[in-house]
Image 1 (cartoon, rainbow, N blue to C red):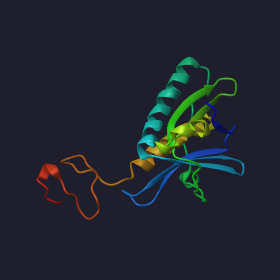
Image 2: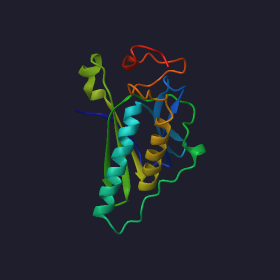
Image 3: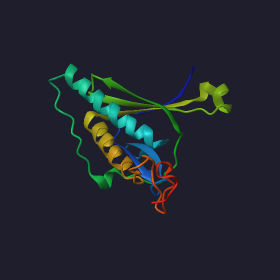
Image 4: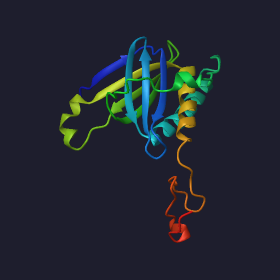
Length: 177
């Protein structure tokens, strides 16, 4: 399989954010290399899963390389928001992590998801690699968890998200609350 590849090596900034109102938000992952910007459409669950994976991955790197300084998770909220134009290159399918020991980079690897109709064009699938410092990817993951948690409130009875105008709760026999 021959994929179309884009590398930002290294990124100057990487972030994930959401645009829109809770319940109707669209999530993005965005990497910068000076003036070059690559934006990828992601799902909320991908942001959450990536954040957990980053934490585990950084812990593994630290245990294998105890001489490395600890990665910072600090970020400036103003800088973590998505920057326009928000024109995604593709929708993320697979998201992976790798480590380049030589330059101490975490590589964020994102592969395009293909629809059923596009499966025959698998050789045209895109892949993007963001070469990030451990602190950049750690800050991105912490910010991603923060953004993902800002969604709709969760119903205490059934565990489903509630709309601002009310919630049809199956556990409460359909009564809105």
